[in-house]
Amino acid sequence: MKYKDLDRKMVSETRKFLMLFFVICIGNFSFSQSASQSKSPGEKKLKVLVTGHLGYVGSAFVKAFGNKYDIVGYDLLEGDDILDYDQLKRRMKGVDVVVHEAAIPAPVPGKNFNDYFRTNVEGTANVARAAYESGVKRLIYASSTTIYGIEGGIPFSYPISEGQSFVSQYLKADDLHTRDIDLSYHMSKVMAEQIIAWYGLNKKMETIALRYGPIDKVNMGTHVSLENVVQATDLAVSSKDKFWYEAFSIVDGDVDFIDISKARKMLLYDPKPAQYNREQIIAPFQDRLKLGH
Image (tube, rainbow, N blue to C red; front, side):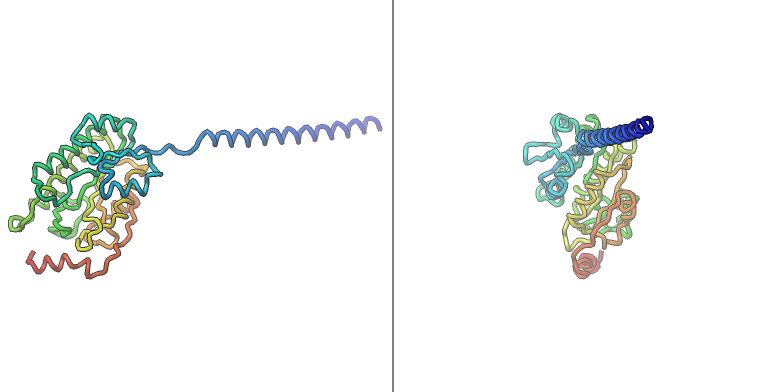
C-alpha cells in the first residue's frame, strides 16, 4: 500500500510539474510574441517629396495621403526652386519617391516658349538628376494628355492608345498651321517626358508618367476629376511592381476614346465616372464640328 501511495503521489506531482511547465512555456511564447510585435510598430512609411505641393494636385495629394506617407514639400511659394539643383539635392536626402507636379501650366498669359522650356524642361531635368544622384527609387512625373496632340481637351485624332507615339501627333496634324494654337506648353511636356523616359529605360531609376488632361473641366473632352488624379498618384507611389518607365493615361471612367487598360492592369487604376451630364461632355466636340475642325 505504501508503494502504491508513493506511486500515486509521484504521478500527481509529475502532472503538476508538466502543467506548470506547459503554462510557463505558453506564457513565454505569448510574451515573446507580444514583445516582437512591440518592436515592429509597422511598415516604415515611404518618404515622398512632392514638388509643387501647394498647387492644385499636389495639395490635394498631400491632404489625402499625408498620414500614409512621410511627405516632404517643395514649392516655389515657400522659396523652393526646381531650377536650383543644389537645393533639390539637399532636400532629397533619404527620399524614396518623388512626385513631380511643379510646372508652368497652360495657358499662362505673358509666358513664351523660353519660359515653358526653362521651368518645365530644365526644371524636370534638375529634378530627375537630383533624384537619381540621391538614390531615389522612383520618380512620378505629372505629364499631360496634350502630348498626344490634344488641344483644349480635344484630340487631333481618335482613338488614343497609351503606347501611341506622341510627337507624331503634332507632325501629322495636317491642319495645324490653320489653328491659332501656341504649342509651347505642349512641347515642353513632350520634352520633359523624354527626360523621364531616359532614366527609366536605361534603368537608372524607376519612372512613371501620369498623362492626364484638364482637371475638373466640364467642357473638356479628356476631363478627369481631381479625385481620380490623386488616386492614380497614390497607386503610382505605392505599387510594389517595377516600372522602368511606364506612361499611363489618367482620365475619368466614362472617357472612352483614350485607352486606359494599361493603367487599370498595372496600377489597378479604377476611375470613377465624371458627374457630368451627356450634353456637357459632348459639347466640345460639337463646337469643334461647327468650326469645321
